[in-house]
Image (cartoon, rainbow, N blue to C red):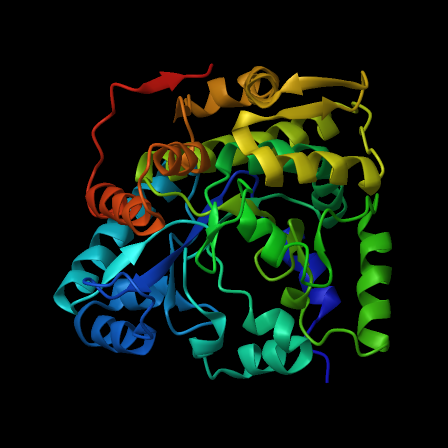
Length: 391
């Protein structure tokens, strides 16, 4: 039986307000001594329910019981969403400390065995595991999702179309998962290779052009029994039918609060600049998925340390130059929002790779990232002297 009401979904976009923002961050639940994944989600959820109603409604499960998501709820704008998220993070990390666990934030756990992880026993996740089997069970990954309100379903679909070519740049900037199943993967974002390249209806979507076209696609999936819920469409950017938002899902989870906040700001700016360009009648640059996939692979493999293809000119440019291009393009919207995201000289994947090259073990590298997460997500983070503005 279908759980998608497409008429109601269109109404959600008709009633949406441009620029509302919701942030979702996924964390690994860890044993404090070994830093192994530990299946403690239900205990954390129960503890929150008995002590803090606001926190309890902000916590969400993911596929495995050793993962927890914290959500800002709908902020009036990006500043409001970030403020809400900071408060919920602080509460969540304090709760985790009281319950005797720590939280980690990289795109993958460096050595966890997926065969040992317990899945959440909800109807939704049972459907996912029953439907996808090995593909779902092996997906022990952690990411950052950002929702931005966009009025009008047709407009939201066109904004998603405009965002397609930007996905590899956002991934390269966010790459933060080098280790997987006890090995140095040699990739900057092994999370993307494990999840995005394995799940169906995932990665770079087609350009649909209109709500009518996107709806026809969903109707075909429903009619053929391919999906039962709209959330079984896992594209890296998608119209979220329940919230009336454009949801960007390409980024690895970040090890520091400042990096997560900066990525959220940049994503919001990109979504709203796309909406502005659409309103101004600028043509949509919609490269075929095969060309965007070339850049997606470059982002997976080399991240911020590599090059991306400028698809309009047919030449390679440093990933950092592509980031600067995003900032220049979004400067009108960013100026209005009053945001100026800053990023470290080296992102998470670069820091992990450098530490490994210096002789640290995978376990030592991960311990350092967990320590950074504990220090920065639980309270306001002081700016590091190594941070630079990229505006």
